[in-house]
Image (cartoon, rainbow, N blue to C red):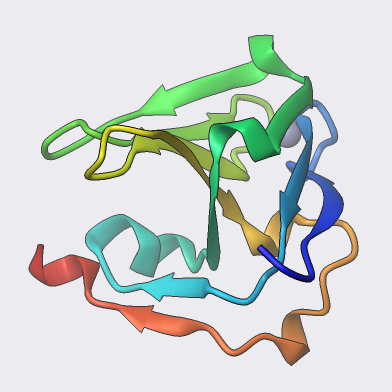
Length: 119
Ligand SMILES: [Zn+2]
């Protein structure tokens, strides 16, 4: 990951806070049933690049379909700032909602469409 930076982010109310190291090059806009409704933009990182700093007790887990992904969200404000799952190789991954980072330049991103709806 060249150009990787450590960003801070969190939910809306501030209960859930995290740090993530990512380069924001491969940001994904997924059209699956939940991503379309949430409007999230995702950056996928190995779980070692992600650290939850606050709010573990405030997280609720939403799962559907194959239940392979944990769509975590803040129980107070409802914002889903990140999700957890495993990639096809079985590695623990975190998908961070780039819209929930404190200092990401969203206008400069060129999200890659991902056809999650057809999976
Ligand atoms: Zn919150």
